[in-house]
Amino acid sequence: MAVNVLIFLALMLFCCQVGGQEAILQVSYGSTVRQYCLVYNSSWSNISHSLTGAQPYPLVNLTSSFLCEWGQLTPGSLQGQAVAVMRGECEYSTKAQIAQELGATALLITSTKSMVTPSANDSEYSKVKIPLALMRYREFLDAMQVFPDGMEVRLYDPPAPLFDTSIIIMLLLAVFTVVMGGFWSGAAEKMKQNAGPSADVSDGHSDSSELSLYSPLKVLLFVGMMCVMLVLMYFFYRWLVYVIIVIFCLASATALYNCLDSLMTAVGCGTLSVSCRGKTLSVRSLLLAAVCVTLAVIWGVYRNDDRWIWILQDFLGVAFCLNFLKTITLSNFKICVILLSLLLLYDVFFVFITPFLTPNGESIMVQVALGPGAGGEKTDGLVEIPADFSSSYEKLPVVMRIPQFSALAQNLCMTQFSILGYGDIIVPGLLVAYCHRFDVWMGNSCRIYFISCAIAYCVGLVVTFGVMLATKMGQPALLYLVPCTLLTTSILASVRKEFRQFWNGNTYQVLDESRKPLLSDGNSGYAGGVREC
Image 1 (cartoon, helix red, strand yellow):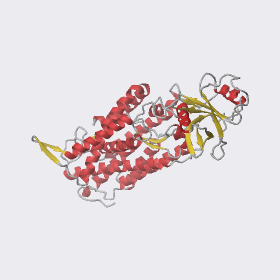
Image 2 (cartoon, helix red, strand yellow):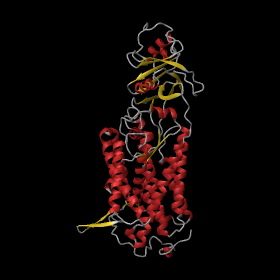
Image 3 (cartoon, helix red, strand yellow):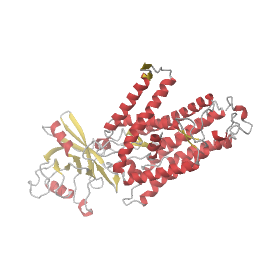
Image 4 (cartoon, one colour):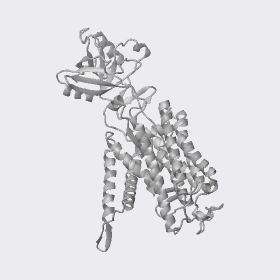
């Protein structure tokens, strides 16, 4: 329980995309073709936006030279050819002007360091007439091995489509998680209702495996702790990120075990218990625990391999969110309104207001979410790409990540992801779960509150993605999700003349055995039966 609360305090509520001035270097010889990442300045170099419009040039390897001194080669000796040189020793514009004098038609600067969008003084831009781009030295060596007999190169920058299918997958994944989490919470409430109120809940716990938020003061303290943790992550990211990683491994393994164990119980799978020295052991539990721990360890070991680890992270993330929505319950709609409203303010403040307070003008939320060493992020129109394709920095494991399938140039440089914070799933999901439990308390057979709130969440997420695509900026998703879900459920309860019950919820502290306070105003007859919708 404590682990779940700690990891939730680390959830960064954001949804953003990252892009840059990346292009593609297509190298060919005969029927063999390879493509590599280029970083260039679109306001400096004119590169074709299509492969068919890109001119082919034979490539000359001068990486043994920095090309910083005039007179190294005979003028015109590189006529009609692209040339590759090493980065360093002099300015980009100097290398380009020397290459122009030699007759080169394009300049590739190979780099062993992180590649930042090349730039120069304003007076230098007009002096360079040929395309100039950076590429990884490691990838240039790979091209030399693949094409030992010569290379023909084309430089082009395919425009990234406005819409990527990863957004649809993200939408489906988020809605599935919220709906299943809300369903599980309501199903657990139904089982508890059938069993009768036998647990002592005076301390806010409905049973040993659930924690109920029923006090506004506790909600205020909860949100305050989230703010403090986010600020601490901003200043001490280098150390605290490992704490969050360890907690995520423990929490996700536990959550996955609970999800799989409940699923196997629901489908009627036996426990396969065995006795050993007077003690009974469940073979199913041991196998599930071994599988869950193994998956969490695999994620921990390979967490920075962006090629495939996102699949396992999303799988563990879904399990974590489902278990959280089942474990943490909100006792009434009043608590839902307080919690969601405070977290909405929290989200907006740390995304939109903090850039005016930080030295570098960066949002604290985005800075923490992407990590201080994140490559591929634009700053003042520049983009930085790591020299090594593999990630060399730690990222917080509190987001769903889906690679952008159509961003070809960006993915050659560094895998780009559409991301959605766990908080954007869990926070509205707590309201969806409350709606399902309220349907159970009221005996609504058609689960009208649960379905309506789930649809409102889906609509809010569609609006979030729509605004993000229109503005080409990451959006605080709660800015759209909270109004959609709160307004929908409030209007529904008012129309059905059940707002007072919906507002007060099922507070076990004030209920007698007949549960009449919940079912007042002529609804007491529904305590033991099913109410028509």
